[in-house]
Length: 271
Ligand SMILES: NC(=O)c1ccc[n+]([C@@H]2O[C@H](COP(=O)([O-])OP(=O)(O)OC[C@H]3O[C@@H](n4cnc5c(N)ncnc54)[C@H](O)[C@@H]3O)[C@@H](O)[C@H]2O)c1
Image (cartoon, rainbow, N blue to C red; front, side, top):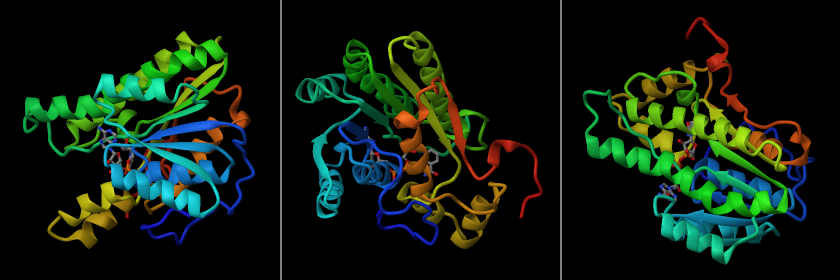
């Protein structure tokens, strides 16, 4: 099971009903949080998982956990911002049936308080990283006539988000990449979708909460953004990724699926 995070809510049984037997899945940023949980969930569903991660030790730790649970995984050191590194990885691992472009970074700031360098860094990881990764593995999928891509966007890719200017711009771009590429390849047998999570309890979010003067208040406020009044768990995002990646979703492409406890459903009383 995905570790390091409260798992009080874990709807997925140990052996998922949706299967990825015989498939190879590559997950970027799989050394932490949502990516780690997707990698472990896909392995439990029968996939061989390639854990592609910038922080090599974190990636290897995910591989270790998957192997200890009886799954198949290997790690690849990968910086998604480097086109040459990504294309070299695609030469070493040419056959990928399921590609999850999950690696991403956050950033706090408005347009006025975001430096050009910070803006470029967020775009390099969150947008160029997805572009590089899809450009490396999509041709193989198209030539084989099958495959599924799941990108990690965000509710901030569907709506603006206060004080998260660069992040929100980057996630709107991920939705755009997903929809445009899905249309371009709709008849190729390759499906391309993205997930738009609300706030999910991962190291990414917990570190941000810890920076607030009163972390308990910040956590409550972040939970209240979701209509359900709580943050999501990585497993809840991994479940949706598994569905989109699998043959249970063969008529779904170009979708930006909110997995957000009702955040983007409309207005609701907060608290
Ligand atoms: N946690 C949330 O609330 C939330 C909400 C919406 C969307 N998301 C998105 O989900 C994805 C995962 O978020 P998370 O909360 O699990 O984050 P996280 O910080 O816990 O994990 C992200 C992982 O990506 C890796 N990474 C960063 N830059 C990389 C690079 N250049 N190349 C390869 N790997 C790199 C990191 O080392 C880390 O292991 C991100 O794209 C994020 O924007 C998260």
